[in-house]
Image (cartoon, rainbow, N blue to C red; front, side, top):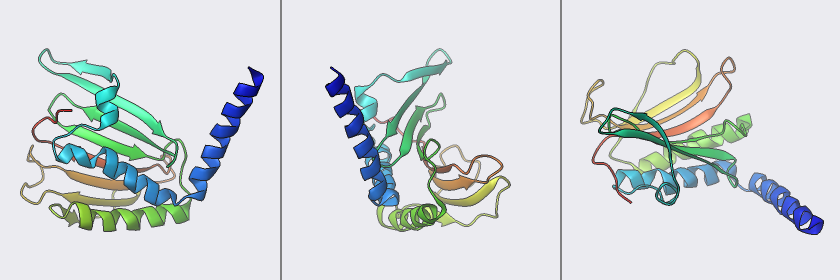
Length: 180
């Protein structure tokens, strides 16, 4: 039995070191593509379909549900929230395993390149620096102005040191509810 646990721990540690030897920013962008992009095509991520989400709020007709899991190869965690207003939030973040500065810069560049290739229907918005953010970039559906409930897009940001330096990539989608 001890041998089994030692082997399990060794595998876990080896997996962690392999993850850091890989191109972590690329693995994280691929994670976002695999988990979040299908939502835009009307499909919930497979992990959401196969696991029970945590029920959060209910207004009688709708229930807000949250799914959360770590992704060891990227060191990111994934969170999918189906909110009461019909919006779906799909977020990856390095909160538990913060990227070093160089990886953050590479991640920002890869996200920008990925957005141009995979989501050309969204327009990059240049925003003024926001208080509390070290980095902020967004791509939004240009058909809808700010404040329109149909507006959706992708946000990539990093909080400043005052908060916790967390890097996040979030799809905020409103549309027909995806089905598995």
